[in-house]
Each structure stands twice: as structure tokens, then as C-alpha cells.
Image (cartoon, rainbow, N blue to C red; front, side, top):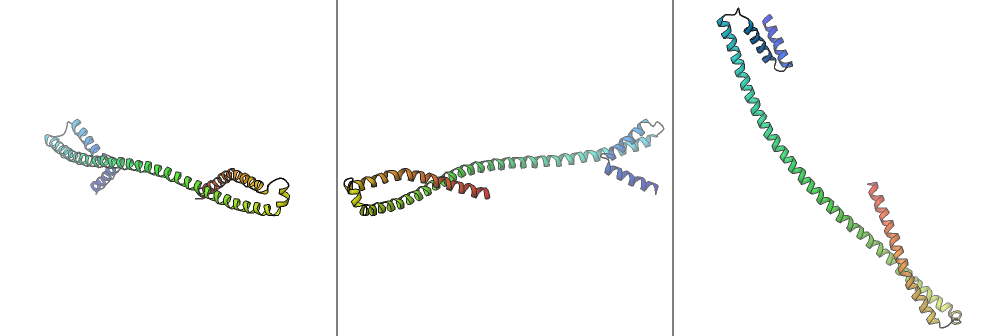
Amino acid sequence: MKDSEEKEKKNKREDIVPYGKEADVLKKLKETSVNESLSREEYQEALKDITIHFDRLLKDAKLLTSVGDRLQRKLKSTNALLKEQAEEIKRFNEELKTKNIELQLTIDELTRSRAGRKATTIIMLLAIGLFMLTEFMETTFEDWVAQFGDVKVWSIAFKVSLVVLLKPVESYLEHFLLKRAQKKEKKKFSLD
């Protein structure tokens, strides 16, 4: 009974303490080597136990080395694969950055184009309205304008000055619409 309890304690200690078996064998070897009262058979038995334990240790060491080597190869293989994938991800990121820049340039150009079309449409409508207004004013105030000279000359001069003034107004309107569109895009992206 006492023997089984000691073995159980010994096994628990070996599970807790690394190299517990080896420490016990070394302790036994030291005790045997300093004990001069042992017989030749007892020395041979102790040497046999040590030989068996050493053989087991050597087999365990070979197994651990084999497993360690296999794990090392797998680790190297995995690291190489991870490195390759990291380089591929880096390449994809660079491609995405390039595509994003191209896309942003296209969006900017589209926004400019849209703003330009809107400005041109507004200016064309304004010009038509102003030309109709000048025709109306020409017929309504024809007698009054005639005091200052030929009505047709004044009408043409007024219309030419309107045309000349419409281009800067169109540029300003296009700039204004472009800024407004850019603010909307920033606001849209900041909400996302």
C-alpha cells in the first residue's frame, strides 16, 4: 500500500516538475555511487536501471528532435508562404492605390464636366432671356433710343456687350458649381 502511494506521489511530481524522472534517476545514481556497502549485484542492477532509463531518454530525444525538425520545416514553409502572400497583398494594395488615383481623377473630370455643362446651360438660357429682353426693349423704347442715334447700332452694341460679359459670368458660375459639387462629395464621403 505504501509502495503504490509513493509511486502515485512520484508520478504526480513528475507531471508537475519537468524532468522529474531524470532527477530521481540522477539522485539514485548519486546515492548508489557513494554507497560503498552495496554488493556487486546491486551495482549491476543500478547500472541496468540507468542504462534502461538512458536508452528511453535517447529514444525520447530522437523522437523530440524528429518532431522538432518536422515542425521547423513546416514553420519555414509557412513563413515562406506568409512572406509570398504579404508581397502579393502589397502588390494588390499598390494596384488599388493606382486604380483609386485614376478613379479619383476620372470623378474630378466628370464633376468638372458636369459643372461646365450646367454653367453653359444656365448661361445659354440667360442669354436667350436677355436677347429676348433686348428685343422687347428695342421695340418698346425705340423712339427714346432713336434720340441717341441709330437703334440698330445701339441694339447690336448692347447685344455684343452682353455676349462679352457672359463668358466671365459662365466661368464664375462653373467655378461656383464645381466647388458646390466638391463640397457635396466630401459631405457624402464623410457620412459613409
